[in-house]
Amino acid sequence: MATTGKLAVLGSINADHILNLAAFPRPGETLKGENYQVAFGGKGANQAVAAGRAGANIAFIACVGDDDTGERVRHQLQQDNIDIAPISAVAGEATGVALIFVNGEGENVIGIYAGANAALTPAYISSVQQVIGEADALLMQLESPLESVIAAAEIARAQNTQVILNPAPACPLPDALLAMIDVITPNETEAEALTGIRVDSDENAALAAQALHDKGIGRVLITLGSRGVWLSEQGVGQRIAGFKVKAVDTIAAGDTFNGALITALLEKQPMIQAVRFAHAAAAIAVTRAGAQPSVPWRHEIDAFLSSQG
Ligand code: RIB
Image 1 (cartoon, rainbow, N blue to C red):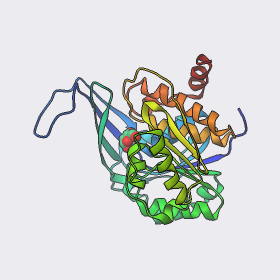
Image 2 (image 1 turned 90 degrees about the horizontal axis):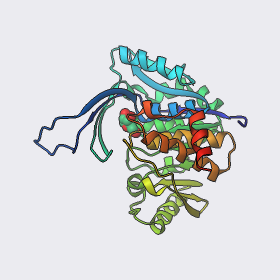
Image 3 (image 1 turned 120 degrees about the vertical axis):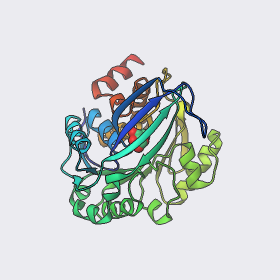
């Protein structure tokens, strides 16, 4: 493996309560579930785990509650090759929670309670600025307070640390933040929320990518679910197909893609190869249930890629 640059991930940690049902309940309806599981999740933690298991040199900036879940999550993250020193256990707070329904098609709907994730304030970011400054890249999402994401991006810019934003869940963002981002990785819904352009074809993906370039972002990767990814670098775009697998659930597929992608880029893999690596990691993740339990290790990604020829 090539020399790996340092990565800082900033984001959320949740305990995911996952219920599988044949179909999503409608308003006012109660349905019996077929399987219930509690597993570690949170977009930030999932991306950190994906990077750690893929072989990145990674530190994770986050907050948990001072509860049993927070203690167990931190222990697990350490097992996943992650420097957990910048994770704070917040007194009197509960670790974040996600309530997830998965239907028979493997689709999901998610509601989250921030809990300790709300304590990831700009003041806390300032206390860990050295971690950001020492990193070659900073990967963030939007389950943390927006003002903290902005504060972290400002520190990263000032310290020549690359900023990668996975703008999930979808929310409108100020131009000042977009102008500080080097790589952005929205899905179709998030790209539409940011640009107003419905990403329902390659042509429209190119238009949405251009709108994001116009905000000052050099590299845009719009994830298109089973259709792959629209990659646009400085306005030159192409679609890179993913791998076909039978999906059990898609929880954390995007997170796995992001963590694996940045790991490959920090190893100086060329962009198209890095996308293929990330596609492979995500393909494995969708064949397994849950968020972090589904995230593959490096040897599994390498074996999957070899099996594809
Ligand atoms: O992206 C998947 C994640 O979203 C889940 O693990 C859940 O915690 C929510 O944050």
